[in-house]
Every structure is written in structure tokens, then in C-alpha cells.
Length: 477
Ligand SMILES: Cc1cc2nc3c(=O)[nH]c(=O)nc-3n(C[C@H](O)[C@H](O)[C@H](O)COP(=O)(O)OP(=O)(O)OC[C@H]3O[C@@H](n4cnc5c(N)ncnc54)[C@H](O)[C@@H]3O)c2cc1C
Image (cartoon, rainbow, N blue to C red; front, side, top):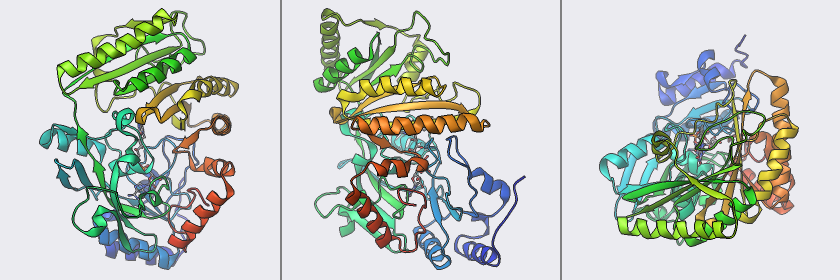
């Protein structure tokens, strides 16, 4: 039974102030609404906020932040809350700031190819807007539900369909406007000079003070995101490979050829052939399914790239690598070519939970990380479900460890935490860095870091957020 357990008279005082700032319709302390924000699909502990507030303007966000400082109440910003690692849960209660009303697309510059968006603009919204108005342009789209935020995807260093060619979503931010934890409004990038949001060059670059911090250094209110030419021809190719090391060798060759838009190295459990949650691999299944995407602005360009890609596969076969092309049903292929692509494997088990831990690694060690991930998953009683995906011409490669789990089983959640902790240590030992780790892993990650790096995080946090109100539980307690 959920109950309100708020400290009076502060609770009523803050509630009334929030009503004055955003209006009665956009603040709530109703238990049913608070409950909605108290958990997500991840294995993180649920926690109730005390208030949910939906600001509609930058000035309202500033006033909320000033109020939180005056009352020393924590603030957690959120758009969709779908990181699958609990990053927008209100770890110390307080005010949950739902940013969905900040949903204006303020500018699209088709010549310098950028869009300026408010912090609540969703990937689905920006995609639809570009489809309708600028069909020659697109942006990096995570294969996530269309309700996730464009800006929040950059905050988590997300990855999309153009990440192999151009980098991850945080590489594509050219400017930010931010409400600092004490309420001041600042800009970084060319937009700080007033006129254009085209570039993050050539002033001191403060963008990194706000991306990857999960809200702990302020609330981003606007961002300039790079757009890219949208290819006119696009297709994909499917291969079965028996061995993960062969797949990684092939991956490195394909990356360096620069003819592929995106490459997925899927474990058999979650591939384009079929999704499985069975303890043993069916005998006719390869260990790996490779999905390779190729595109071009013209058919001729596409054909040349395709021939180069096929030549690399052919050479591998001649060396004795067991790799076989296959054609999936047309419905599978057309779904895979969608952007974003539906990912129907988070719910491989009935039970409502999905934890999605990623690690960005040097490409040459992902095969090892794949194999060790199998051992860890099995040791803790889970089926493994891995996806390897290279970024930025191979300067980093992501390996995603997905764990569908049963939310109502505390015993299973405990085993899952153990598995996640072991993957964290293993991946860091191999040279990796965790992608959007759950807050319960932050201390462990920082335990591996250079102490002066950790000191600097603390100093920056103290300097920007003297009252420690912003997104508690992220990187520093
Ligand atoms: C089925 C599925 C598939 C997915 N596939 C992919 C994929 O292919 N690639 C990928 O990159 N991701 C993927 N994701 C993750 C998804 O893209 C992320 O959830 C999303 O990018 C983050 O957006 P959000 O709106 O959910 O963020 P939220 O959870 O709302 O926020 C993320 C973090 O940023 C903070 N924050 C939010 N807004 C602000 C702000 N304005 N200022 C400061 N801090 C803020 C929050 O406090 C939180 O810490 C997938 C998710 C699902 C459910």
C-alpha cells in the first residue's frame, strides 16, 4: 500500500510555490502519478518523488531550480525514462521535473545541417518533422521507442543508425543552453555569441560539462543537433557466422573499408533470424548473425560499396572462415530496415524487467568481452543476449548485454545485480568504459578511475551545485 509520508509544513509550502510557477494543472503530488515516475524496467530500486512538475518554459525551469535550492530539495530531470538502467529515477525523492512540455523544434538549418530543439523534443517528433519538411536530412536515431528524448539520448552518449559513419549522439551536439544548478542560464558553442547554433568550435568547449553527467550538472533546455544527408538507396545483407572471433576480424575489415553504414554482430539469442530464450542453442543455429547495412546517394554509389563489401566476405570465405549468406523473410528484412528499428527482444521473458548494460570498447577486445559475458550470464542463471556494434569508423565498438528478467523476483534481481557488477569489472579490465551504467554501478566504475579524475568530478559538482540538489545518485552521491 502506497502512502504519502511527506514532511510538513515544507511539503505544502513547496507544493504551493510549484503551483505558482507552473500552474495547477502541471504539478502533482497524487500518489498514482508519483508512482508512475517511481520505477522503470531496470533492476534499480524503485523510489517515489515527492512532486512531479511539468514546466513549459525556460524561466519556469529556472524558478523551480531556485526554489529547490532555497528549500534544499533534490531535482531529477526526465523525458521518457527509458534508459533501461534507472537513470531518471528520483534517487533521493524530491522534485521530478518532467520535460515533455518543452517540445518545440526551434530551427532547422538545411544548409549548415543542424536543428535546434528544446529538451523535451522526442526522437519520433523530430523524425516526423524532418520526414515532412526536410526529407533529404536525417539525424542519429536510437532503436528505441519514439517517445525518448533527442537531448536525453545525447546525455547518455546514445547510438543510432549513422553512428558507424559519424559517431555517437553526443559527438553530434554543436551547442547547448543550460539552467545551471543554481538557476543561472548559460550557453556553450557558437550560440553563446548570440546568432547561430551551427558549431561547437572554436571557444572553450563546455558541452562535456553536461553530457554524460545524467543531469547532475544542470538542466539542458536547448540543444543544437547535427543533421546529415539522408541516403536515397539503402539495403542490408545477412550472414551466419560460427565463431565470434571470426566475426570480430571480419568486423574490423568491414569497418576499415568505410562502405558500411552500420554492422550488428548479434548473438543467436537475439538475431534477425529468430529471438530465443532457451538454455541451449538449437543445433541448426550459428553462434552469430551479422546484419550489414549499406547505402548510397545514387544507385551507382550503392553498387560500388556493395561490391567492396561482398569482396571482403568472399576473401574471408576463401581463407576458410565459416560464413554463409542467408535471406530472411521479407517482413523481417523490411522491419530491420526501419529507422528506428523495433527491437523485439527486451521482452523475451515474461516478467516486465529489462536491463540493458552497454560497454564501449576497443574493437579488438570485443570478442573476449562477448565470451566472458556468456560465462558471467550463465554463472548467474541467465541466458546471454549480446549485441556488438561499431561506432565512428571503428574508433569504439559497443557491446550491449541485455537481460530480460522477472521484476517481481527479489532473488532474480539480486542475481542480476551480481552479473552486472561482474560484467562491469570484466569490461573495464579489458579496456572498456561503461555506457549509461545504472546509478548502483557508478561507485564501482569510479573505483577503477584515476583518483584525480574522481576529485575533479567532485570539485566541479561542488562548484556548480553547492547545495547538492541536482540529480543525486549520479556519479557522486
Ligand atoms: C527498447 C529500447 C531500445 C533502445 N535502443 C537504443 C539504441 O539503439 N540506442 C540508444 O542510444 N539507446 C537505446 N535505448 C535507450 C534510449 O534511447 C534512451 O532511453 C534514451 O536515449 C534516453 O532518453 P530518455 O528520454 O529515455 O531519457 P531519460 O531517462 O528521461 O533521461 C536520461 C538521463 O538524462 C537526464 N536528463 C534528461 N533530460 C535532461 C535534461 N534536459 N538536462 C539534464 N539532464 C537530463 C535524466 O535525469 C537521466 O539521467 C533503448 C531503449 C529501449 C527501451
